[in-house]
Length: 135
Image (cartoon, rainbow, N blue to C red; front, side, top):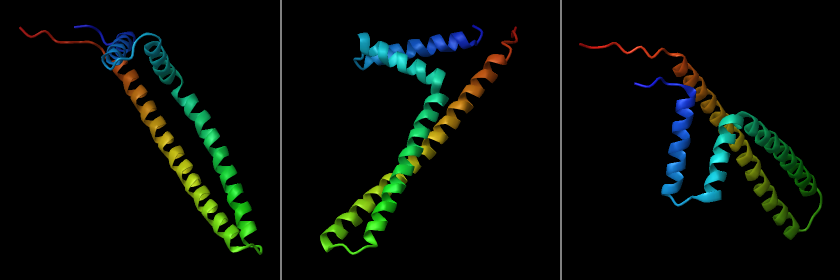
């Protein structure tokens, strides 16, 4: 029986990914790119999640600002068509703001799951490979 090492697990994952990509017709440069993305994700998942989370927070703040501008305009005297359009725009922006909030929560959950799996992998690597012989 082979010892479970990080290198063995990584090599197995790369082989499995490569074979799986080929099975669905992803070959050549496209396969290399997919494997590179997977490697990046494994090494930088937390960093890329933080970048996306930060951008989403900025988007969320911009959306809230736009909603407040629309609210301000709705509080003034405007014609019926303009009011209808602004209310529809406001509802659309609120939906986008809520969607971005949900995406940040899902990203946080995904990041936590990845960290947990990495922790479990490290624990598995530190276990001894003692296998008793049965006679």
